[in-house]
Image (cartoon, rainbow, N blue to C red):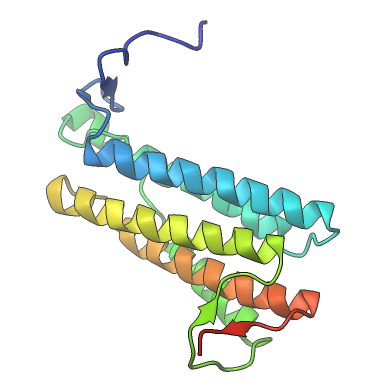
Length: 184
């Protein structure tokens, strides 16, 4: 099977279900941004592993897999009835697990009421890139929710994931002994 189909040469692509849409369709933008986030998380995971930090490895891999399911849900044309029944949805357990992990990570952190400046190390900066791409994906997904609808828990999952990534960045400061940079 060839990797190229030439089907997108005129600026269109197919959703799951076969419906052709423009490549700038809000659903394509949303699942494409989540795909970008997954690649950034993969880079973060590899950077941590190369530095000998495998404490977050399983969680990051799990999140990358969950993101692919979220992408699939956003790429499904739920207007096609036979396809809508097959659409993957975001599990409420995924949101609950992110919340539990945020709570567990937060125990290690000093309370802060200030905005922090991203950075401190290349790895921490990469974690903040993941967080900001996640926030962009959330903005895209809210447009999909408004225009096309999304399955339950999709927006909650993406929102909570950005919180999780922010918390991880703070934890990485602690683990590496690098002080957070306050905005003011």
